[in-house]
Image (cartoon, rainbow, N blue to C red; front, top):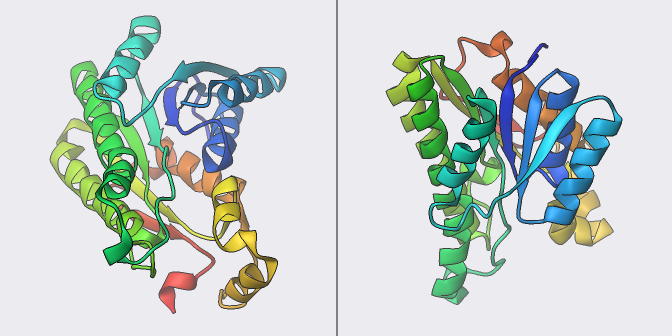
Length: 252
C-alpha cells in the first residue's frame, strides 16, 4: 500500500497499537505525526522511524485537554499545509469494578479520554479536511467492548460503544465531502494495556486464549496493518465500518 507524502496524525502513538501503526504508516511512505502525552516515549518512536528511513515528528497532545486537538491540527497544518489522515488511538483502561462501585471522577476521566477525546480529534480533523476540499480518511480506536459489553468495565464499554456511534455519524455526514471514517475494534492484542488486564496473570490469559477460534494473542502490528489499509486508497469505498480484530471471539 502506498501512502507516499500523506500527512497522518496518530494519537497515542508512543506505545502499543499506536507505535506499531506509526511504524507501518512510515514504511508505507507517510509523514507521521506521533502525538502523545508521553513525550519521552514519543520522541523515541520518532527516532526509530527516522533510523529506519521513515519520516515522523513528535507532537505533545493530551486529548482530554480542552482545545488541545484543534491546536494540534492547526500546528500540523501550519507546517505541512494539510492533513490527509488520522488514527485516533489515545485511550485508557479505566476502573475494573461493577457499576455501583465506579466513582463519578473515574467515569468522567474515561469519557474525557476515550470518547470526548476522540470526538474533539475527529471534529478538528474533519474541519480541516472539509476546508482542504481534498477528502481524507480517519480511523478511530474502539474495541470489542464497543460491540459487546464485558463485565466490570462499564465506563470503558460505554465509551467504546460511543466511539462506534460517533464513527458512523461522521461517516454518514461527511461521506459527500469524500471523507471516510471507520473504527477498529481490537481485543487480545499484545500491548502494555493487555498486561494491565488478562495478561497480568498467565493462567488467566491462557484461559482467554483457549476461547478464541484463532488460539493466540495478536501482535500490535496486525492491528496496524488494518489501520493502514483503512487509511489507504485501497479502502476507498469503505466507510462507517467497525471492524473486529479479535481472533474471531465476537462471532461466537
